[in-house]
Image (cartoon, rainbow, N blue to C red; front, top):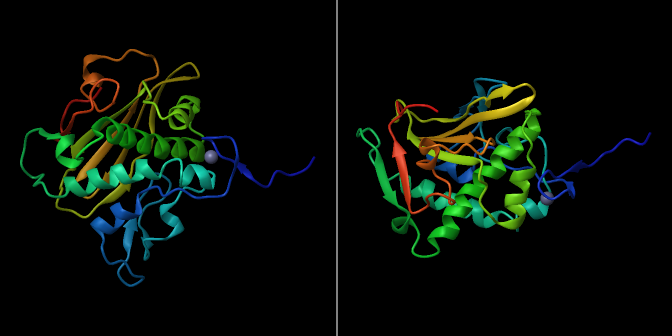
Amino acid sequence: MEEEKTVTCWICGQSGDSKEHMIKATDIKSVFPTLTQKNPVWFHSDEKVNIPVGSHKSDRFKFNNPICEVCNTNRTAQHDKSWEKVSAHLKQYDLEVRGTLNIRLAKIFRDKIYTNALNVHLYFIKLFGCRIVESEIPIDTSTFSDSIMTNTPNPYLFLRFKKAIGSREKMLSLSPVHIKQKGSETVVAAWMYTVGQINVELLYAPSGACNDFLKKSFNPIHQYKVLRVYDFETEDI
Ligand SMILES: [Zn+2]
């Protein structure tokens, strides 16, 4: 049997050769503007902790499983940019102040509010899909790739923004993906992306049972005009 050398891009099915950042380079720079080998960031993931990284471009910040160049650039560049703007905007708030912060997306984006909200949603779908594929987590990524390929919101993936505990700490992290299964089927999954003062929780609920709680989360199907940033202690699903 011939050995397959190329990896298939989980988004479009073409061969993959481009590595996606686990944490966006601009997010890394916003928390750690100057990174050097002598002044590294300490990187934690569910596989490893306390890894010194001395460059924003380090492969340590990238997923091992590549996607294709088209998906990593042309197809998703706008998604990345929309998140970049939201992330930069969130830095101006004092998140030590308690209570839910309601930010109208119109304050961040002058126009195309829906498109930009969708872009943010799709940006995190790309990250989550890369994470699932890399760690062989039992979640079907086909609805994620459909959403990216057709530029449409995914009904099963919700975002929740929260203030990080000890938000004055400089922090970049990816949590483990927590899943709940019934038999071999994953019925709920949760993952968290932390950049500086913000936790972005990704909640995956494929059963279609979108309860009121999830509807308050960020998904362009239900709500896209206001981005809510909750206190860390907000109840869980
Ligand atoms: Zn692709």
